[in-house]
Image 1 (spheres, rainbow, N blue to C red):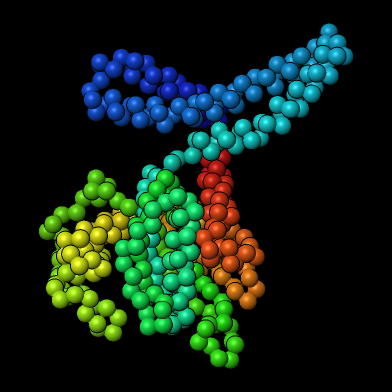
Image 2 (cartoon, rainbow, N blue to C red; image 1 turned 180 degrees about the vertical axis):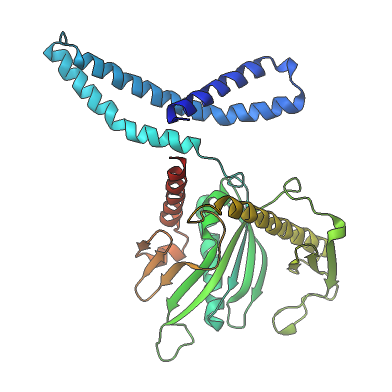
Length: 357
């Protein structure tokens, strides 16, 4: 099917849905909701197609006018100016239409569970993990999102062994999903007396928050243990068995939560993280299936390679996936991530557009 034919199919479907909804008394409540959502989703696409088709028709009419020998000099000059103006907008309009045709990631509008863990590099890796966690907290504040800390396991020198947070707001997962992977830091640690640059790493996982309707978990598939929570060095957090460990038996996924003094609150938080991890695992499985025939996997969630390096001595941050380097490391660590986030989204769109052709 040609590009033009695809556009016509979409417009016809939009018209069909409009007529069906106008006869709403013939639809069940469930069908009415389903078709209303489809109509709503298609409306901005059809509006974009309308802009594109209007501009294309205007170009054709102007070319026809210029081809007419009876067109006088004044009209010809006006037509040529208008043709240049409209013609200059066509590449952007074409791209806008193509982007509107891209399949939407169902998880893009979801909230997210953010997990940061210290990797290789000892104490310095823990310090870097804490720096990354604070970086995302500031980024969330810049975006007007809510950043709720779920758990933090501290290391002995003020770093984090691991930390997690629930991030809620508009388009959270769409903007954070490309942050998943291994982040590497190169700097002189505060504990280094010789002034040598060390390299360490931390891993970041961004999971779309799943609702119960997304992932159904059977009670029989869970093993739930409760135990006494303890802080760094074995110091007791409280004197009751409030900490909760949940094991999803079919997959072996294990979640532990102990930050709350209430066992029930810890269980609720742990189930939220478990549901998000199982949902992401299913998304990755489907993504890998779809990507099996492609040379490069896009959006598969592969976290086996480093994605970004933060070089403090040179003041630069490099994203290795898109070869983007910025020399504003202080601003980046303070939550100014838009340059990288926007570039990663644009790169993903370009790759998916190439698959449509």
